[in-house]
Length: 607
Ligand code: PEP
Image 1: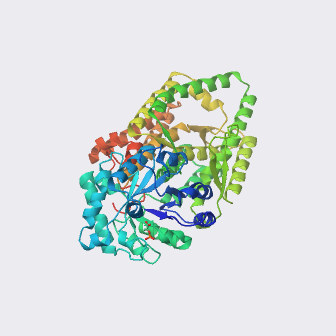
Image 2: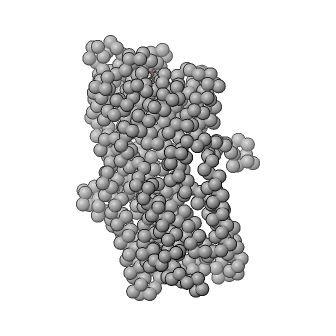
C-alpha cells in the first residue's frame, strides 16, 4: 500500500516545517508514505523529515535541463535526492493545459532520470455521466503504457476522478473498485498479467478519515493520493493507518520478530550455562541466524531505494570475490605466521572494538524499533558531511532516537568486555550480530550472480581447506569474532571448540534470502523456495558435522552448503515448472517488474 500527500500550492515555510515535524510521528509500518510539498519547500521539508516518509515533487520538466524558464527538471530532483514526482494531476492537465503527449514525455524523462512516479488519470463529471470513465482513463494511459520504463516498481497509478478532487464528493466503493479493476485489466492486456498484478493503483479524490477504511479494503485499491486531508497530520495519520490495516502483509513483520529473536538469544547464550552438544549448538545457532537474517533482508528489500542501506553484489564483484578473498586469506596467514600473537591480537581487538559496537547496535535496533513504545520516540536528524575536507560533498542524514544511546553503550560495553576477556560467549554475541547484519545488508544482484558467487566460493573453500593449511591456520590462529565457537565441554581450564566460519553462514544466508525475495516477488505465500533453502542449509550442515566427526578432519562447509542450497533452488523450480523465471530472476529486473516477476511484492493485498 502506498499513500501520497499532495500539499499542492499550500502552506507557508513555517507551516510546511510544522507539518513535516508532525509527520515524523507517523506510524508507517506496512505502508509507504510519500508527501509532495511545493518545489520551493522540498529541501526544507527534506531536512526535517525522517526516512520513513519519502518526498515527491508535484511536477517536473519534460526534456531534462535547458532553456525551460520556470521548470524544474527530473535530473535536478534526482540530484537533490527527491525520489518521487507526481505527473498528470488533473490540476496540471486543466490549469496548465498539459496534454497526454506532454505528460508521456514528462513521465519518460522522469523515469530516465531515475525518479519514481505517481501518474494520475481520471475522468470529468460529464465524462462519467456519459459512461466514458474507463475510455478516458485508457486514453490518458495510452502513451505511457508504451514506455518500456513503465514498470510497477517505478510507477504508481493514481485514479483520481476530477469531480471528486477537492469537492468533498468521493467515489463510492463500487465506482472505485470497478474503475481500478478495469484499469488493471487494461494494463494486463497492454503489458502483461504480471505487470498488472504488481501495479499499485491509488484512489484519489476527497479521501478523508471518514471514508478511507471502506475504500482501503477494496481489493484493487492499493493506497490513496490525498490532497486536502494530507495537510492535517492527524487525519492523514488515520488514512495511512487505514491502509496498514487493509494490507494483510503476506511477507511483512514475521514470526521471527517474536519467536526467532528469543530463539537466537537462547542459542547464543544458553550453552554458556547448560552443556549442549557442539553439533546441535552449531546447527541451531547457524540456521537461526540465517532465518532471522533472511527475513530482515526481505524487510530491507521492501524499503524505497533511498531508504534501504542494503548493498548489491555485482557480477564483477562476484567474479573477483574469490581472488580478493584469497589475497586477504594469504595476507592473514602471513601475519599469523610472522607477527607475534600478542601484537596481532591487540590489532584485531582495536578493529573489532569499533566494528563490534556498531554491529550490536544495528542487530538489536531493528526488532526493538518495531515496538510501539519505541516507534513513538522522537527521531532526531543530523546532516553530516563525512567527507569534511570537501565542502561540496553531499551531507548524509543520520537519524537516531533515545533508544540508540543505550544501544550504543551496550555495544561498546560488549566489545570492550570481549577485547578484555576474550570469553567465547562474547565472541559469539559479536559474531552473531555481524552475520545477521551481513545477511540482511548484502543482496545478490540476480540468481545467476548468486550461482556464480556460490560456485566460485565452493572451489575457493575446497582449495584453501583441502589443498593447503592456510584456511585452518588462519581460522585457529586469529582470535576474533570471524567464526562461531561451540565448546565441547564447559570446563574453563582447557576449553576446546568446534568452529564455524562466518562465511559458512553469510554466503548461503544471502542466497537463501534471495530465494525468500523470489517467493515474495511471485506472491508465493507458502514460501517454497525459502523453506527448501532452509531445509537444505540444515541438512548440509548436518552432513558437514557428520563427515567432520567420522573422518576427524576439518571440513570446508561450503563443500556441502553450496550444492545443498543451489540444488534446493533448482529442485524446487523443477518441481514447480519455474526453472526459466528462477534462472532469469534479477533483483533489479524484478524491481523493474519484467520477466519472471509475477505476483505482488512484500505486503501484497491480493495473492
Ligand atoms: C488531489 O489533489 O490529488 C486530491 C485527491 O485532492 P483531495 O484529496 O483534496 O480531493
